[in-house]
Picture 1: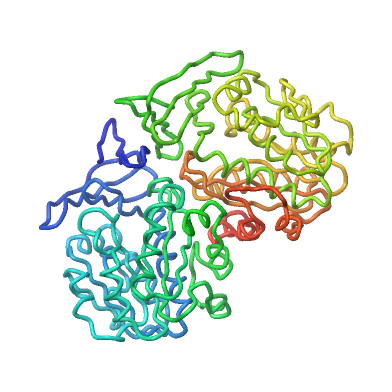
Picture 2: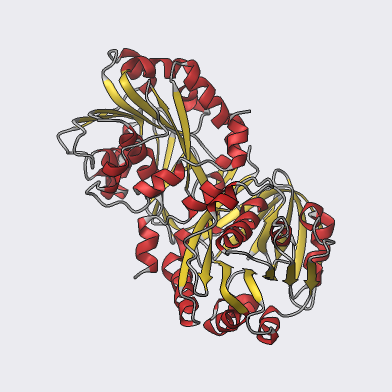
Length: 286
Length: 286
């Protein structure tokens, strides 16, 4: 639920009992699509802000944290990722990070709503700078359906860059969806899913996610926390699951010598993110 | 600046252009002391909340993050800490963590405002459970003045558990104060100061803090980021400075075998917190 007042945008996270706000310069535009209500705002200190159905999606200032952590850890955990599928991710920021890896031969982004990408091209052009890369494929259709029709063993890495597990994205957190992903991944393949707040959701969403991934056949799972100021609690996470591969390990030397710049990710940050605080370990393993 | 509306407490971080909110059950009590306006609230999902002059100090639910990271990294970085001074910290949560270390012989807490401690005893009794420890000394006076009068080389670890560097706490971020701290610390002594948000303050407050600490004579400095949902951006930090000792190193085996429970801190979390993301390194070393 969101509201504006005296030039402030507020998002109230009702189940968490917390709220986040950004001071606004102005609302820029909005559209009701077949799927959702998208709004674009200019903020005072965080650049542009996109909200969907009142929920903060991303801002210019801090999206690098999320996009880098949704892409580089999973890609450096896979032995040799060539074929990447991104479910959701319509702002194209994850796609850009994926295509920084020269070994990636094809990256397919499947977002249900084309307007997310059209707004991103207009307000976050830096995130869309790889959309014309010949290795990039942008589809606008249902990701669950796409995965259901995908050939067995045809993908190396699946990145689920989705909204919260309520409404349209709920299915992306279920064992049924993960079973399709497991089938579609080649041997040694890895899936990563954004997995909400370590403080707020360790003993609920994150714990259930591990269980659902293992139920679907994945042999190892690992949650990596990272900061994300505009999401509830300012502390976020992604969870990886491997098909007969250890997602707690990664190509550390390749990550150190990656040959492209990042602002948050580094081999040492990756290593640090593999360490969970005791309260999270206890909640997930309960 | 804070406000309440429809059972929500909001703190607006005006310089950052961000806001944080918590859903309330009720306001419990408030007092205008000689120094500041203290308010106590019961929240919906974060337990009790203390605010000072409208700024969030701590909540029941997430204060463990801050208190553990303000105490255990600095104590395990020191070779053998016996005499500890805490400037500020009137809620006594840092004092409790310090006294978990059996080697500490004396811990003196100096907060200017006794009412902070009186409210904490009432609403956060778990944080005050070590106030009667014979090693604990609680003073209510000015911390800057206390440090000025302290004998040379009489302290091993100084923890500056202060409010933001505006108003009463501004002096606690300056080279003059750090010069006194440097003089008061014994050889190998370490000071740690809470140092605001990595996202919002790396190229301002944190960068200046390193410069001021080095100007005061400290030979090594190190910022450690950690999550803290109720503070601006949800991402916080502390900065350590060593008197002829390396604060980037710590007694890892002792930290692993510490013999008391923590919810966020561990030897591995400590190691991970010593790694700064590239954008912070660039900002601090600029």
